[in-house]
Amino acid sequence: MLKIGDAAPDFELPDQDGRALRLSALLTRGPLLLYFYPADFTPVCTREACAFRDLQPSLTAGGLTVIGISPQDSASHARFREKHGLSFALLADPDKRVIRAYGCDGPLGFGVKRVSYLVGRDGRIMEIARAAFRVAPHTALAQHPLTTKNSR
Image 1 (cartoon, helix red, strand yellow):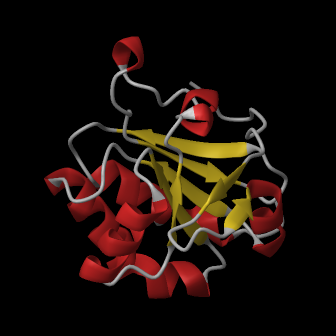
Image 2 (image 1 turned 90 degrees about the vertical axis):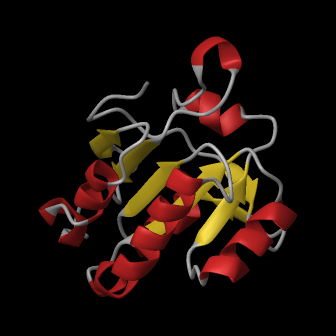
């Protein structure tokens, strides 16, 4: 698992529409909340995504971009976004390459750990939230005072 101060590994993954998004390009807009979640349409993952959706106006106003990553394909992400009215991108990592690079692979390679990283403009990990079955630590990270500091 990455630690505060580590460089966030750059990557490129397809979003829910099949468009490739690269971390380094996203960071040019400002800090990023990068959250890893186990699966679309599961109860805790749905609560988490909807909580970020509800915070989206204030996060966007503060210059923070939200991106979710899980192993489902782009088509599943598109259905999940539409069903729950999500406005942020969901990236598909079916081979779990990025999930592993960020230390979010589950025990013995099964599943995905629920982890959120606040990545500064400089590409460094600023803060981390880990909580498998609770959403509050992840939403608290999204509202962290550092999220409004675009200069990092």
